[in-house]
Length: 427
Ligand code: IMO
Ligand code: MG
Image 1: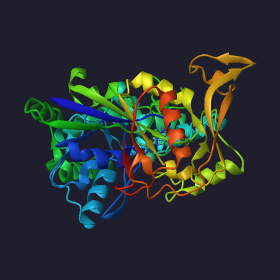
Image 2: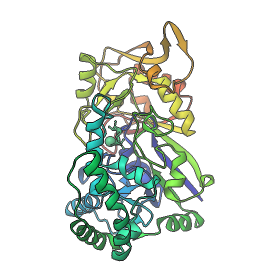
Image 3: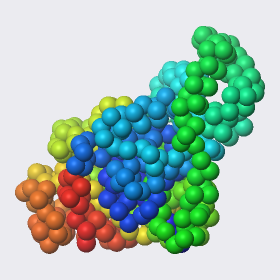
Image 4: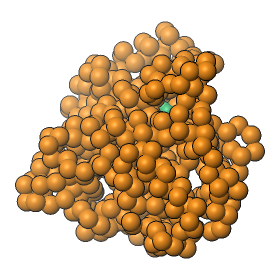
């Protein structure tokens, strides 16, 4: 029995997808356990380049089971489209299953995400507008529709009869928006239910049986710890319950926490963030633009195409996420993006009004005001993309990785030097 988790240690887009694509080799099952199609996991392999939003990144191994756990919210239209696209490119989805406990993301969630963002005005969170936040609100408010309801027309009708009048009242009275027509919505979602029915299972039972047989199960996180509802930079966070933390993996999969034996945290060699919220090391000038454009996969959102905000590695925020996740080993991704910089900075501490800040601040207003304290490192100014062993890296790059390891307080087991499967150094 052993499950292991891959989580994002920063604000998302750390390279979880490609890490899962690699580590899936060790497992018989890969489970996505949280969030929805706000996530975008880019994977490049022998079949081409893929951006997955709901399907686990283990899908490229035909013999592995890929499960979408109960902690994920499913937009049926998006899932069906993703399945169709994968199939059309030669990737089989015959081993893909979805938990009957997953909540369904409905069109009114998408509309509400849009309207709520507009209503926030200058305080907008800059969500992905996929409806994920409102879908989790309904889950907590006990107004959700689950996959188990979606695939049973009678159950769906009963739930929708209860929920839709409330949503329509909200849309019409608060936002002066057009209400949804019951019959139209019902018919469309019965049809989605029919198409998805063959994929729906009690996925937790499948995982528990596999663990009982002694198999290894990989739990794939979405987003990053600093976007987590509890641990993140609230309110500039995502709404997933369970969280984007490793602790949420057990809940979002439907297993006990004692089954998890290893937590792999993925960290970029610098920082990025999409959407609003504090980011102490953000570089607003030319250096930020260079960081954004430098790599083979430039820093634009895989889900929304928005430019990602870029900055130097923030060891305060990253160490905090090592601790709140209980990270046991780390992946340092995209080291190659730093190849051409003559000098590279690492933020080793913060200062507020001239005083050192001891821990990662909870209050957004404080985090917005801190000044990063930097340590300067000499760049290596040569390509690392062909390195396959740690010793192949230039001395300065080795020093940079070792320094980050020291600051994180956990072993860096993998270093990526490019987006291809083989561009991952295993130490
Ligand atoms: P992956 O899994 C980066 C951000 C959004 C926004 C905030 C809330 O690819 O790392 P939401 O739509 O979730 O209500 O938006 O969270 N966000 C992400 N940023 N990577 C992600 O996922 C993200 N998922 C949500 O940009 O700031
Ligand atoms: Mg992403």
